[in-house]
Image (tube, rainbow, N blue to C red; front, side, top):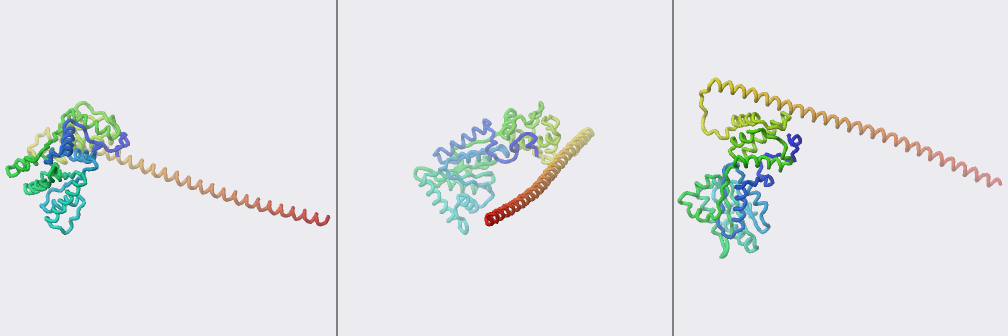
Amino acid sequence: MYKAFFGFQSNPFRLLPDPEFLFPSRIHQKALTYLHYGIDSDSGGFILFTGEVGTGKTTVVRSVMKELKKDIVFARINNTRLTSIELISLINDDFGLEVAGKDKTQLLHDLTAFLIEQYTRGNKVILIIDEAQNLTPELLEEIRLLSNLESDKAKLLQIILVGQPELRDILSRPELRSFRQRTTVSCHIYPLTREETEHYIFHRLEVAGNRTAVDFEDGAIDAIHDFARGIPRLINIVCDFLLLAAFTEQTKEISLIMVREVIQDLERENRYWQNHASDPATSASDEVDEQRRDARRDAHYQRKNDVIANVSAAEKLLDFTAYKHRVELENKYVAMDKKLNEMVRMMQDIEGRLKMEVADISAKKGEQMKSE
């Protein structure tokens, strides 16, 4: 809705893991370097990539996948709440292998044959398992056994585990020490700093098409960072609502008051950080503040609805004007066509009369010649 108003080519804060919007922070650059190293090296161990929800893990992974060489074949698994046979079936299916009606032994045989075939062709095979924190210790052991598939000189399958910090807690269990020992590359993404948050916001505005689309009042970005705690996904959510709020008010200034109101609305509706019940005892001053915030929010929503209604009315007026103009043009074309047809008929009549006159003159000349 607000792209044209701010001069954007795309939505700068949409919640999609688009590699084009990847912010090159120090920690994200480090993650890219580690992943590329793990993929390009011949160590054959596991690659462990973790981070809090919304820190950009999927965006980093997609950026790496986008840059993979042609001799690399990969499969990616997102659903990890599975049984052992379901996991192997998903892996084979993503590699393009037939899985219908096959038991676990047949599936493993097909996977092994596929890996050997790719190795003989000079291809490297990579398996990316996202949301790996949901894997049970039994499934992790199953995955470790898959990593045992190897030739005399190289591993046939490179495995990348992507997950939330709980994955590291799971791998710290004594029964998974064999898995830990085979992890050769490990990287964790941390939230953005205050300075990085500011650079992140303007980076996304620039990628979307207009770095100077809005001006932030002093303290506005501080408030965004404090609420989002440096988590890119939450920064996106806040900034998207801020752009909508600015659009409804037809302004390109993001004030601290506007940021606080948006954050209050988000906290009320989603409670991103609240982990405990609030105290039921509320002071009289708190109630007054709450009523004032409600009044401001209602006024804000009313302004937004008014703008949307005006935009809708303008669109309808433009549609009607365009329709009226098109009808007028069509009527003009019809009138012109009629005039052209009349002119053609007149020309045909004139041509017919001229032919008749020429014939009469020729006949008269013929008679005169005979009489002479």
